[in-house]
Length: 481
Image (cartoon, rainbow, N blue to C red; front, side):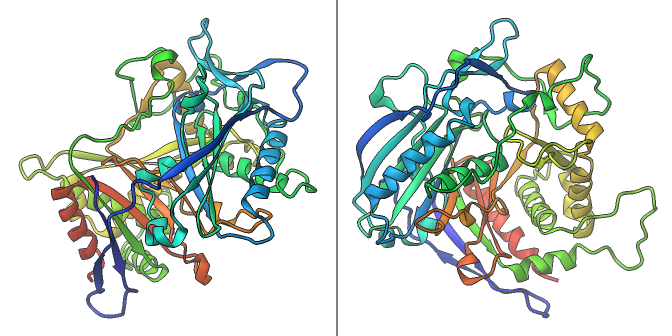
Protein backbone atom coordinates (compact mmCIF):
# COMPACT_ATOMS: atom_id res chain seq x y z
CA UNK A 1 0.00 0.00 0.00
CA UNK A 2 1.35 3.40 -0.85
CA UNK A 3 2.12 5.73 2.00
CA UNK A 4 1.08 9.35 2.00
CA UNK A 5 3.28 12.16 3.23
CA UNK A 6 2.48 15.84 2.85
CA UNK A 7 5.54 18.03 2.45
CA UNK A 8 4.86 21.45 3.85
CA UNK A 9 7.16 24.03 2.31
CA UNK A 10 7.48 27.51 3.78
CA UNK A 11 7.88 30.57 1.52
CA UNK A 12 11.43 31.15 0.32
CA UNK A 13 13.23 33.88 2.20
CA UNK A 14 16.06 36.14 1.02
CA UNK A 15 18.54 33.98 2.90
CA UNK A 16 20.93 31.27 1.65
CA UNK A 17 18.53 28.40 2.37
CA UNK A 18 14.78 27.95 2.16
CA UNK A 19 13.32 26.02 5.07
CA UNK A 20 11.17 23.03 4.16
CA UNK A 21 9.65 20.85 6.85
CA UNK A 22 8.07 17.41 6.49
CA UNK A 23 4.80 16.52 8.16
CA UNK A 24 3.42 12.99 8.18
CA UNK A 25 -0.16 12.62 7.01
CA UNK A 26 -2.33 9.75 8.32
CA UNK A 27 -2.82 6.75 6.07
CA UNK A 28 -5.68 7.62 3.67
CA UNK A 29 -9.01 5.89 4.04
CA UNK A 30 -9.29 3.28 1.31
CA UNK A 31 -12.78 2.15 2.30
CA UNK A 32 -15.41 4.86 2.41
CA UNK A 33 -18.06 2.29 3.38
CA UNK A 34 -20.18 3.23 0.39
CA UNK A 35 -23.67 1.76 0.04
CA UNK A 36 -25.27 1.89 -3.42
CA UNK A 37 -28.99 2.70 -3.40
CA UNK A 38 -29.78 3.09 -7.10
CA UNK A 39 -28.10 2.35 -10.42
CA UNK A 40 -29.69 3.34 -13.68
CA UNK A 41 -29.04 4.38 -17.28
CA UNK A 42 -30.18 7.88 -18.22
CA UNK A 43 -31.00 8.35 -21.94
CA UNK A 44 -31.04 11.81 -23.56
CA UNK A 45 -34.22 13.70 -22.80
CA UNK A 46 -34.98 13.54 -26.53
CA UNK A 47 -33.56 11.21 -29.16
CA UNK A 48 -32.00 12.42 -32.39
CA UNK A 49 -33.91 11.44 -35.53
CA UNK A 50 -30.87 10.13 -37.41
CA UNK A 51 -28.52 7.58 -35.91
CA UNK A 52 -24.92 8.27 -36.81
CA UNK A 53 -21.33 7.33 -36.05
CA UNK A 54 -18.91 9.85 -34.60
CA UNK A 55 -15.49 9.96 -36.24
CA UNK A 56 -12.58 9.93 -33.79
CA UNK A 57 -9.35 11.68 -34.75
CA UNK A 58 -5.91 10.15 -34.37
CA UNK A 59 -5.52 12.20 -31.19
CA UNK A 60 -8.70 10.62 -29.81
CA UNK A 61 -7.63 7.08 -30.75
CA UNK A 62 -4.73 7.14 -28.26
CA UNK A 63 -7.04 7.69 -25.28
CA UNK A 64 -9.01 4.45 -25.06
CA UNK A 65 -9.39 4.41 -21.27
CA UNK A 66 -11.48 5.97 -18.54
CA UNK A 67 -10.60 9.04 -16.48
CA UNK A 68 -12.28 9.57 -13.12
CA UNK A 69 -12.57 12.62 -10.92
CA UNK A 70 -14.47 13.56 -7.78
CA UNK A 71 -16.00 16.90 -6.78
CA UNK A 72 -16.82 17.44 -3.09
CA UNK A 73 -19.56 19.83 -1.96
CA UNK A 74 -20.57 21.17 1.43
CA UNK A 75 -24.16 20.61 2.43
CA UNK A 76 -26.68 23.29 1.44
CA UNK A 77 -29.97 23.37 3.41
CA UNK A 78 -31.79 24.68 0.34
CA UNK A 79 -30.73 21.61 -1.63
CA UNK A 80 -31.24 18.33 0.22
CA UNK A 81 -29.59 15.34 -1.41
CA UNK A 82 -32.85 14.20 -3.02
CA UNK A 83 -33.13 17.54 -4.84
CA UNK A 84 -29.47 17.43 -5.86
CA UNK A 85 -29.99 13.97 -7.36
CA UNK A 86 -33.17 15.03 -9.17
CA UNK A 87 -31.53 18.10 -10.68
CA UNK A 88 -28.36 16.28 -11.72
CA UNK A 89 -30.33 13.51 -13.41
CA UNK A 90 -32.35 16.06 -15.37
CA UNK A 91 -29.22 18.04 -16.23
CA UNK A 92 -27.41 14.97 -17.56
CA UNK A 93 -30.38 14.01 -19.74
CA UNK A 94 -30.63 17.51 -21.18
CA UNK A 95 -26.90 17.79 -21.87
CA UNK A 96 -26.84 14.43 -23.66
CA UNK A 97 -28.87 16.00 -26.46
CA UNK A 98 -26.17 18.39 -27.75
CA UNK A 99 -23.58 15.81 -26.64
CA UNK A 100 -25.31 12.93 -28.43
CA UNK A 101 -21.99 11.09 -28.88
CA UNK A 102 -21.56 11.01 -25.07
CA UNK A 103 -24.73 8.90 -24.86
CA UNK A 104 -23.39 6.37 -27.37
CA UNK A 105 -21.06 3.39 -27.25
CA UNK A 106 -17.56 2.73 -28.61
CA UNK A 107 -17.32 0.50 -31.68
CA UNK A 108 -14.52 -0.66 -33.91
CA UNK A 109 -14.89 0.11 -37.59
CA UNK A 110 -14.15 -3.21 -39.28
CA UNK A 111 -13.02 -1.54 -42.50
CA UNK A 112 -10.54 0.91 -40.98
CA UNK A 113 -9.91 -0.96 -37.67
CA UNK A 114 -10.26 2.42 -35.97
CA UNK A 115 -12.49 3.25 -33.04
CA UNK A 116 -15.62 5.32 -33.48
CA UNK A 117 -18.70 6.12 -31.43
CA UNK A 118 -22.10 4.73 -32.34
CA UNK A 119 -24.44 7.57 -31.35
CA UNK A 120 -27.22 5.16 -30.44
CA UNK A 121 -28.65 7.26 -27.59
CA UNK A 122 -28.30 4.47 -25.02
CA UNK A 123 -27.36 6.96 -22.32
CA UNK A 124 -25.10 7.54 -19.33
CA UNK A 125 -24.81 5.63 -16.08
CA UNK A 126 -26.07 7.23 -12.86
CA UNK A 127 -25.51 5.90 -9.35
CA UNK A 128 -26.92 7.15 -6.05
CA UNK A 129 -24.97 6.09 -2.96
CA UNK A 130 -24.15 7.04 0.62
CA UNK A 131 -21.11 6.81 2.87
CA UNK A 132 -20.92 6.08 6.59
CA UNK A 133 -18.42 8.94 6.96
CA UNK A 134 -18.72 12.68 7.16
CA UNK A 135 -16.37 14.93 5.20
CA UNK A 136 -14.70 15.88 8.48
CA UNK A 137 -13.86 12.19 9.01
CA UNK A 138 -11.96 12.22 5.72
CA UNK A 139 -10.19 15.43 6.72
CA UNK A 140 -6.94 16.25 4.95
CA UNK A 141 -7.34 13.20 2.70
CA UNK A 142 -9.66 15.35 0.60
CA UNK A 143 -6.70 17.07 -1.06
CA UNK A 144 -4.98 13.79 -1.99
CA UNK A 145 -6.26 11.92 -5.10
CA UNK A 146 -5.67 8.41 -3.80
CA UNK A 147 -7.12 5.19 -5.32
CA UNK A 148 -9.75 4.89 -2.58
CA UNK A 149 -11.82 7.46 -4.43
CA UNK A 150 -12.63 4.80 -7.02
CA UNK A 151 -15.57 3.93 -4.76
CA UNK A 152 -16.92 7.43 -5.37
CA UNK A 153 -16.41 7.37 -9.17
CA UNK A 154 -16.92 3.83 -10.54
CA UNK A 155 -15.78 3.00 -14.06
CA UNK A 156 -18.24 0.16 -14.61
CA UNK A 157 -21.74 -0.88 -13.56
CA UNK A 158 -21.50 -4.57 -12.76
CA UNK A 159 -25.01 -4.96 -11.36
CA UNK A 160 -26.70 -3.96 -14.65
CA UNK A 161 -25.12 -6.77 -16.65
CA UNK A 162 -24.28 -4.47 -19.56
CA UNK A 163 -22.29 -5.76 -22.52
CA UNK A 164 -21.24 -2.23 -23.50
CA UNK A 165 -20.19 0.10 -20.68
CA UNK A 166 -21.56 3.67 -20.69
CA UNK A 167 -19.09 6.30 -21.82
CA UNK A 168 -20.02 8.43 -18.79
CA UNK A 169 -20.90 7.27 -15.30
CA UNK A 170 -22.02 9.74 -12.61
CA UNK A 171 -22.26 8.90 -8.92
CA UNK A 172 -23.70 11.09 -6.18
CA UNK A 173 -22.52 9.96 -2.74
CA UNK A 174 -24.03 11.60 0.33
CA UNK A 175 -22.08 11.90 3.59
CA UNK A 176 -23.41 12.01 7.14
CA UNK A 177 -22.57 15.70 7.52
CA UNK A 178 -24.95 16.70 4.70
CA UNK A 179 -22.12 17.18 2.22
CA UNK A 180 -21.83 15.01 -0.87
CA UNK A 181 -19.55 14.14 -3.75
CA UNK A 182 -20.16 13.99 -7.48
CA UNK A 183 -17.92 11.39 -9.05
CA UNK A 184 -17.59 11.27 -12.84
CA UNK A 185 -15.89 8.57 -14.92
CA UNK A 186 -15.57 9.42 -18.60
CA UNK A 187 -14.11 7.59 -21.57
CA UNK A 188 -11.11 9.72 -22.52
CA UNK A 189 -11.98 9.15 -26.20
CA UNK A 190 -14.72 11.74 -25.70
CA UNK A 191 -12.87 14.67 -24.19
CA UNK A 192 -9.54 16.06 -23.13
CA UNK A 193 -9.38 18.02 -19.88
CA UNK A 194 -10.67 21.26 -21.40
CA UNK A 195 -13.47 19.44 -23.23
CA UNK A 196 -14.44 17.65 -20.03
CA UNK A 197 -14.55 20.93 -18.12
CA UNK A 198 -16.92 22.38 -20.75
CA UNK A 199 -19.09 19.25 -20.39
CA UNK A 200 -19.26 19.74 -16.61
CA UNK A 201 -19.95 23.47 -17.08
CA UNK A 202 -22.97 22.56 -19.16
CA UNK A 203 -24.21 20.05 -16.59
CA UNK A 204 -23.84 22.69 -13.87
CA UNK A 205 -25.74 25.23 -15.99
CA UNK A 206 -28.59 22.83 -16.73
CA UNK A 207 -28.91 21.95 -13.03
CA UNK A 208 -30.27 25.51 -12.59
CA UNK A 209 -33.24 24.48 -14.77
CA UNK A 210 -33.70 27.96 -16.29
CA UNK A 211 -30.30 28.64 -17.88
CA UNK A 212 -29.02 28.05 -21.41
CA UNK A 213 -25.96 25.92 -22.10
CA UNK A 214 -22.79 27.53 -20.77
CA UNK A 215 -20.88 26.43 -23.90
CA UNK A 216 -22.23 25.18 -27.23
CA UNK A 217 -19.89 22.25 -28.00
CA UNK A 218 -18.07 21.86 -31.30
CA UNK A 219 -17.71 18.16 -32.11
CA UNK A 220 -16.34 18.41 -35.66
CA UNK A 221 -13.42 16.02 -35.17
CA UNK A 222 -12.60 16.06 -38.86
CA UNK A 223 -10.87 19.35 -38.03
CA UNK A 224 -8.05 17.16 -36.69
CA UNK A 225 -8.15 14.50 -39.42
CA UNK A 226 -4.87 13.45 -41.03
CA UNK A 227 -3.91 15.05 -44.33
CA UNK A 228 -4.21 13.11 -47.58
CA UNK A 229 -1.61 12.03 -48.27
CA UNK A 230 -0.07 12.29 -44.77
CA UNK A 231 3.14 14.33 -44.53
CA UNK A 232 5.59 13.78 -41.67
CA UNK A 233 7.84 16.83 -41.68
CA UNK A 234 9.53 16.60 -38.27
CA UNK A 235 11.17 13.89 -36.15
CA UNK A 236 8.81 12.71 -33.39
CA UNK A 237 10.82 11.12 -30.57
CA UNK A 238 7.82 11.63 -28.29
CA UNK A 239 6.04 8.84 -30.21
CA UNK A 240 6.88 5.17 -30.75
CA UNK A 241 5.43 2.16 -32.48
CA UNK A 242 2.94 0.23 -30.34
CA UNK A 243 4.12 -3.03 -28.81
CA UNK A 244 0.93 -4.72 -29.95
CA UNK A 245 -2.44 -3.65 -31.29
CA UNK A 246 -5.26 -5.24 -29.30
CA UNK A 247 -8.76 -5.61 -30.70
CA UNK A 248 -11.41 -3.48 -29.04
CA UNK A 249 -12.88 -6.43 -27.14
CA UNK A 250 -9.55 -6.91 -25.34
CA UNK A 251 -8.50 -3.31 -24.85
CA UNK A 252 -11.69 -1.37 -24.15
CA UNK A 253 -11.22 -1.04 -20.41
CA UNK A 254 -7.44 -1.28 -20.22
CA UNK A 255 -5.81 1.89 -18.96
CA UNK A 256 -2.38 2.28 -20.58
CA UNK A 257 -1.02 3.22 -17.16
CA UNK A 258 -1.34 0.05 -15.12
CA UNK A 259 -0.80 0.04 -11.36
CA UNK A 260 2.61 -1.19 -10.26
CA UNK A 261 3.27 -4.46 -8.43
CA UNK A 262 6.37 -3.18 -6.63
CA UNK A 263 6.10 -1.31 -3.35
CA UNK A 264 5.62 2.38 -4.00
CA UNK A 265 5.33 5.45 -1.84
CA UNK A 266 3.28 8.52 -2.74
CA UNK A 267 4.05 12.00 -1.49
CA UNK A 268 2.37 15.33 -1.92
CA UNK A 269 4.66 18.34 -2.26
CA UNK A 270 2.98 21.67 -1.58
CA UNK A 271 4.55 24.56 -3.43
CA UNK A 272 3.35 28.02 -2.44
CA UNK A 273 3.12 30.92 -4.86
CA UNK A 274 6.20 32.41 -3.18
CA UNK A 275 8.19 29.26 -3.82
CA UNK A 276 7.13 29.20 -7.47
CA UNK A 277 8.28 32.82 -7.75
CA UNK A 278 11.57 31.72 -6.21
CA UNK A 279 11.94 29.14 -8.98
CA UNK A 280 11.05 31.70 -11.63
CA UNK A 281 13.79 34.00 -10.38
CA UNK A 282 16.20 31.06 -10.33
CA UNK A 283 15.28 30.29 -13.96
CA UNK A 284 16.41 33.67 -15.28
CA UNK A 285 19.56 33.37 -17.40
CA UNK A 286 22.69 35.05 -16.03
CA UNK A 287 22.96 38.71 -17.10
CA UNK A 288 26.07 37.92 -19.12
CA UNK A 289 24.31 35.34 -21.32
CA UNK A 290 22.89 36.49 -24.64
CA UNK A 291 20.46 34.63 -26.88
CA UNK A 292 20.71 34.93 -30.63
CA UNK A 293 17.65 36.24 -32.41
CA UNK A 294 17.21 32.89 -34.20
CA UNK A 295 16.55 31.02 -30.95
CA UNK A 296 13.12 31.13 -29.29
CA UNK A 297 13.20 33.09 -26.04
CA UNK A 298 12.88 31.15 -22.81
CA UNK A 299 9.36 31.31 -21.37
CA UNK A 300 9.66 31.38 -17.60
CA UNK A 301 6.11 30.35 -16.76
CA UNK A 302 4.98 28.78 -13.51
CA UNK A 303 4.34 25.49 -15.27
CA UNK A 304 7.73 25.47 -16.98
CA UNK A 305 9.70 26.01 -13.77
CA UNK A 306 7.70 23.42 -11.81
CA UNK A 307 8.04 20.92 -14.66
CA UNK A 308 11.79 21.56 -14.81
CA UNK A 309 12.11 20.96 -11.07
CA UNK A 310 10.16 17.69 -11.26
CA UNK A 311 12.03 16.48 -14.35
CA UNK A 312 15.45 17.02 -12.81
CA UNK A 313 14.50 15.38 -9.49
CA UNK A 314 12.92 12.41 -11.25
CA UNK A 315 15.86 11.87 -13.63
CA UNK A 316 18.50 12.09 -10.93
CA UNK A 317 16.53 9.90 -8.51
CA UNK A 318 16.94 6.99 -10.95
CA UNK A 319 20.42 7.81 -12.23
CA UNK A 320 22.82 4.88 -12.19
CA UNK A 321 26.43 5.92 -11.63
CA UNK A 322 27.45 3.19 -14.05
CA UNK A 323 25.12 4.48 -16.74
CA UNK A 324 25.52 8.24 -16.73
CA UNK A 325 24.58 8.49 -20.39
CA UNK A 326 20.98 7.34 -19.89
CA UNK A 327 18.47 9.77 -21.41
CA UNK A 328 15.35 10.88 -19.54
CA UNK A 329 12.39 12.20 -21.58
CA UNK A 330 9.61 14.21 -19.98
CA UNK A 331 6.18 14.47 -21.64
CA UNK A 332 3.49 17.04 -20.90
CA UNK A 333 0.19 17.69 -22.67
CA UNK A 334 -0.22 20.95 -24.60
CA UNK A 335 -3.60 22.38 -25.65
CA UNK A 336 -3.42 22.87 -29.43
CA UNK A 337 -6.71 24.76 -29.88
CA UNK A 338 -5.03 28.19 -30.15
CA UNK A 339 -1.84 26.85 -31.78
CA UNK A 340 -3.29 25.71 -35.10
CA UNK A 341 -3.67 27.96 -38.14
CA UNK A 342 -6.53 28.72 -38.24
CA UNK A 343 -7.16 28.02 -34.54
CA UNK A 344 -9.67 25.40 -33.50
CA UNK A 345 -12.95 26.74 -32.12
CA UNK A 346 -12.41 27.30 -28.37
CA UNK A 347 -15.46 25.06 -27.76
CA UNK A 348 -13.90 22.10 -29.60
CA UNK A 349 -14.67 19.27 -27.21
CA UNK A 350 -12.59 16.35 -28.52
CA UNK A 351 -9.00 15.56 -27.62
CA UNK A 352 -6.99 18.55 -28.78
CA UNK A 353 -3.70 17.91 -26.99
CA UNK A 354 -0.34 16.58 -28.05
CA UNK A 355 2.70 15.88 -25.91
CA UNK A 356 5.53 18.36 -25.71
CA UNK A 357 8.78 16.58 -24.93
CA UNK A 358 12.03 17.48 -23.21
CA UNK A 359 14.99 15.07 -23.42
CA UNK A 360 18.43 15.15 -21.89
CA UNK A 361 21.05 12.82 -20.47
CA UNK A 362 20.62 12.46 -16.73
CA UNK A 363 24.21 13.43 -16.05
CA UNK A 364 23.66 16.66 -17.97
CA UNK A 365 20.58 17.48 -15.93
CA UNK A 366 22.72 17.10 -12.84
CA UNK A 367 25.23 19.69 -14.03
CA UNK A 368 23.10 22.15 -16.00
CA UNK A 369 22.04 25.45 -14.43
CA UNK A 370 18.34 25.53 -13.62
CA UNK A 371 17.80 28.21 -16.28
CA UNK A 372 19.01 25.83 -19.00
CA UNK A 373 16.71 23.04 -17.81
CA UNK A 374 13.76 25.43 -17.91
CA UNK A 375 14.78 26.45 -21.44
CA UNK A 376 14.60 22.81 -22.61
CA UNK A 377 11.06 22.61 -21.19
CA UNK A 378 10.20 25.96 -22.78
CA UNK A 379 11.55 24.92 -26.18
CA UNK A 380 9.49 21.73 -26.06
CA UNK A 381 6.27 23.70 -25.56
CA UNK A 382 7.24 26.33 -28.15
CA UNK A 383 7.84 23.54 -30.69
CA UNK A 384 4.11 22.75 -30.70
CA UNK A 385 2.93 24.88 -33.62
CA UNK A 386 0.65 24.28 -36.59
CA UNK A 387 3.17 22.48 -38.81
CA UNK A 388 4.42 20.30 -35.97
CA UNK A 389 0.89 19.43 -34.85
CA UNK A 390 -0.16 18.36 -38.37
CA UNK A 391 3.04 16.32 -38.70
CA UNK A 392 2.24 14.58 -35.39
CA UNK A 393 -1.27 13.67 -36.54
CA UNK A 394 0.10 12.33 -39.83
CA UNK A 395 2.84 10.33 -38.06
CA UNK A 396 0.14 8.59 -36.00
CA UNK A 397 -1.88 8.01 -39.19
CA UNK A 398 1.04 6.13 -40.73
CA UNK A 399 2.47 4.38 -37.68
CA UNK A 400 -0.47 4.08 -35.27
CA UNK A 401 2.00 5.26 -32.65
CA UNK A 402 1.71 5.80 -28.90
CA UNK A 403 3.44 8.21 -26.48
CA UNK A 404 7.11 7.55 -25.80
CA UNK A 405 8.69 8.96 -22.64
CA UNK A 406 10.06 8.14 -19.20
CA UNK A 407 7.85 10.45 -17.18
CA UNK A 408 4.56 12.22 -17.81
CA UNK A 409 3.16 15.28 -16.05
CA UNK A 410 -0.63 15.27 -15.82
CA UNK A 411 -1.62 18.82 -14.99
CA UNK A 412 -5.00 19.64 -13.44
CA UNK A 413 -3.48 22.79 -11.95
CA UNK A 414 -5.19 25.51 -13.99
CA UNK A 415 -8.17 23.51 -15.29
CA UNK A 416 -10.53 25.35 -12.94
CA UNK A 417 -12.92 22.54 -11.98
CA UNK A 418 -13.20 24.01 -8.51
CA UNK A 419 -14.65 27.21 -10.05
CA UNK A 420 -17.73 25.56 -11.57
CA UNK A 421 -20.95 27.00 -10.16
CA UNK A 422 -23.83 24.63 -9.37
CA UNK A 423 -27.14 25.68 -7.79
CA UNK A 424 -25.83 24.46 -4.43
CA UNK A 425 -22.45 26.20 -4.78
CA UNK A 426 -18.93 25.54 -5.99
CA UNK A 427 -17.00 22.35 -5.17
CA UNK A 428 -14.80 22.66 -2.10
CA UNK A 429 -12.37 20.23 -3.75
CA UNK A 430 -12.09 18.75 -7.24
CA UNK A 431 -9.45 16.16 -7.99
CA UNK A 432 -8.68 13.16 -10.19
CA UNK A 433 -8.80 9.58 -8.98
CA UNK A 434 -5.14 8.62 -9.05
CA UNK A 435 -3.58 5.25 -9.75
CA UNK A 436 -0.29 4.45 -8.06
CA UNK A 437 2.13 4.49 -10.98
CA UNK A 438 5.73 5.58 -10.89
CA UNK A 439 5.90 7.35 -14.23
CA UNK A 440 3.02 9.82 -13.85
CA UNK A 441 3.13 12.99 -11.75
CA UNK A 442 -0.03 14.96 -10.99
CA UNK A 443 -0.14 18.75 -10.64
CA UNK A 444 -3.23 19.83 -8.70
CA UNK A 445 -4.59 23.15 -7.46
CA UNK A 446 -3.34 23.91 -3.96
CA UNK A 447 -6.92 24.71 -2.89
CA UNK A 448 -5.63 27.95 -1.46
CA UNK A 449 -8.52 29.43 -3.45
CA UNK A 450 -10.42 29.05 -0.18
CA UNK A 451 -8.07 31.71 1.18
CA UNK A 452 -8.09 33.83 -1.99
CA UNK A 453 -4.64 32.58 -3.02
CA UNK A 454 -4.57 30.69 -6.30
CA UNK A 455 -0.84 30.72 -6.90
CA UNK A 456 0.20 27.43 -5.31
CA UNK A 457 0.31 23.89 -6.63
CA UNK A 458 0.23 20.41 -5.12
CA UNK A 459 2.67 17.99 -6.75
CA UNK A 460 1.75 14.30 -6.29
CA UNK A 461 4.65 11.94 -6.94
CA UNK A 462 4.68 8.13 -6.68
CA UNK A 463 7.99 6.26 -6.73
CA UNK A 464 9.74 3.20 -5.26
CA UNK A 465 10.88 3.94 -1.71
CA UNK A 466 14.60 4.38 -2.44
CA UNK A 467 13.93 6.60 -5.44
CA UNK A 468 11.51 8.70 -3.40
CA UNK A 469 14.12 9.31 -0.72
CA UNK A 470 16.50 10.67 -3.35
CA UNK A 471 13.73 12.62 -5.14
CA UNK A 472 12.74 14.28 -1.86
CA UNK A 473 16.34 15.21 -1.05
CA UNK A 474 16.85 16.68 -4.52
CA UNK A 475 13.56 18.56 -4.24
CA UNK A 476 14.66 20.16 -0.96
CA UNK A 477 18.11 21.00 -2.31
CA UNK A 478 16.53 22.85 -5.23
CA UNK A 479 15.51 25.60 -2.82
CA UNK A 480 19.05 26.22 -1.66
CA UNK A 481 20.96 29.06 -3.24
